Length: 196
Image (cartoon, rainbow, N blue to C red; front, top):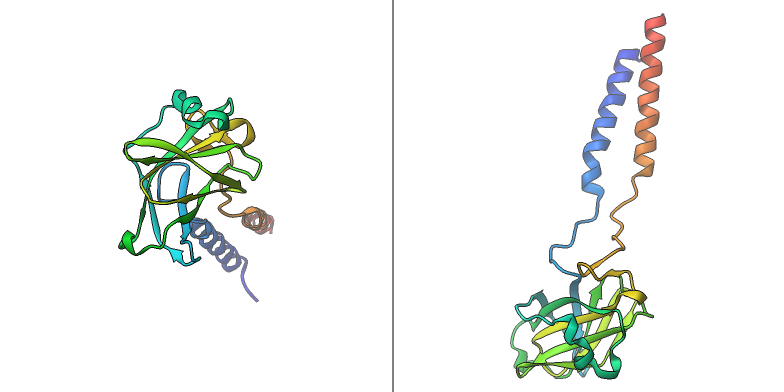
């Protein structure tokens, strides 16, 4: 028969292992900064095009949006991110235009959005569509891209260009419940041993 001391030691060991493993179970955090994380592209023939999304040096003032977007402007629109978008490898080998779907946290299919493309020293409004967590646009070339979102039709915060919806990284309710039950069991065994 297992002694109470060995049983308690075993339970403490299991609890320790579970608490140390909790950080391993969490999904990795995105490594890029800003609201727009990654994108996937296809050329005019539907062939996959590898692209890189990185921080851009260009910027767009929210105050300039009415003139840049014209009739597409909606009160409440703000610039949530500006990215430098480039093709991996030789861009001259790509069959343009390229359609890119960007992952943009907080955007839904009913969000009012716009995409500006920096071409020949000026920002140009290009057609785009919103999806659940995505913005898709078609480009004839690649360079800095500004992403504009209406904060009233999304969960994007105007204050900092961030999503108010955090990605789920894991559900540990079962672990917490198990640890609690194990702790109660250890306490009960200790108490019963002292009484004996």
